[in-house]
Amino acid sequence: MSTNLIEKLKEAVIVGDRDEAIKISREIIDKGLDPLEALKRGLVAGVLEVGEKWVREEVFLADLVMSAEAMKAASEVLKPEIIKRGGVVKKFGKVIIGTVAGDIHDIGKNIVATMLEASGFEVIDLGVDVPTETFVEKVRELKPDVLGLSALLTTTMLEQKNVIEALKREGLRDGVKVIVGGAPVTEEWAKSIGADGYAEDAVRAVRLVKKLLGLEG
Image (cartoon, rainbow, N blue to C red):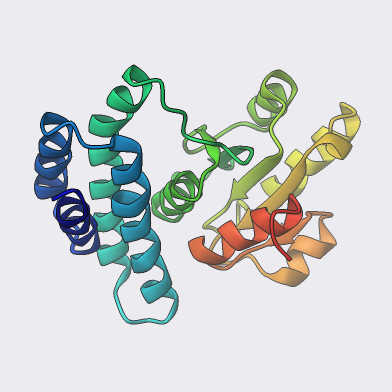
C-alpha cells in the first residue's frame, strides 16, 4: 500500500497535478504512512525526473513549472507531519537566491529554487528586483553557502557584478560561493565578473551548487 501510494504521488508530480498530489499526501498521512519517505520517493523523485526530461528537451518549461508547483503544494502538507513525528529533512547547505535590481522576471529563478529545495538544500528566495544592499545584508545575516543571482535582461546583468563587488567591499566575498544565471548570462560573463560559476538551467544549477560545496565531483 505504501509503495503504491508513493508511486501515485510521484506520478501526480510528474504530470503536474497539484490537487491530486495534495490529495494523495493527505491520504498518506491519514493512513499513518511515513511522510518523509513520501517526500523523498514521491515529491522529490518526481520533480527531479521532470527536470531531467526538461534538460533532454522531452518536456516543456510549462510542464516543469506545473510539476514544481505540485511538489511545493504537496510538501506543505507533508512537512508539518514530518516535524510532528520528529523526522528531519536533511539539508546539504544554505542557498540565498534572487533576481537582481531592476529585473522582475522570476520563472527561471523559481524553478532553480524549487529544484534546489527538492535536492536537499535550504533555500531563501529574496524575490525579484532585489537591491544590492539587500543581498549583502542577507549574506551577512544568514551566512549562506551559496548566493544565486538571476538576471533576465541584458540591462540588468551588470547588477550581478555590482553585488559581487559590494560583497568584496564588505569583506564577505570569501565566505560565500556566488553563482549567476539568466537568459543573457554566459560562462564568459560569469568569469569576467568573478562569479564562482554559471548554470544555464535549473538541473545544471543543482549540479553546480553540489560541485562547489564538494558534494559531488
